[in-house]
Length: 140
Ligand code: ADP
Ligand code: MG
Image (cartoon, rainbow, N blue to C red; front, top):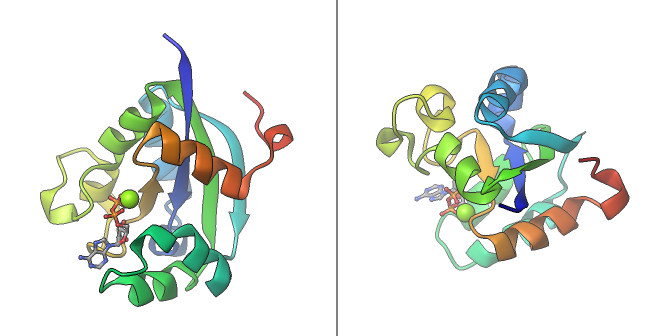
């Protein structure tokens, strides 16, 4: 089975509460490896570009404001079925619907401030990884 890579973001609600390590422990326990990582402060233009797929959604402006409200950690996870595995470990978008033991169930504050982003398909993972990382930044 081929290894996959996917983009993960630890969102501002989680960095503010010092949860980076607790969240990444869950990824590592699930067999996902952190093969690239950077802590950054997104600009509004960067957040708008990253979430452009959602620009017609009613929550778009609030989402962008939230994503620039503090530091984020952008990272690449690698493992078997990494895209789907990451989504499993994250849990449902709305923490009220997230399964026990998932990151969003344990840590999310709300449907918006839900602690983590994860790519939703292999195709989008490739696009999102390339948005933040050059090939030489990723050390598997
Ligand atoms: P996911 O992050 O689970 O892939 P989406 O891609 O649908 O979810 O949405 C992107 C992000 O937008 C969510 O993680 C969340 O931060 C925010 N969001 C989604 N739906 C809502 C909503 N109904 N109200 C406020 N924010 C939302
Ligand atoms: Mg999504």
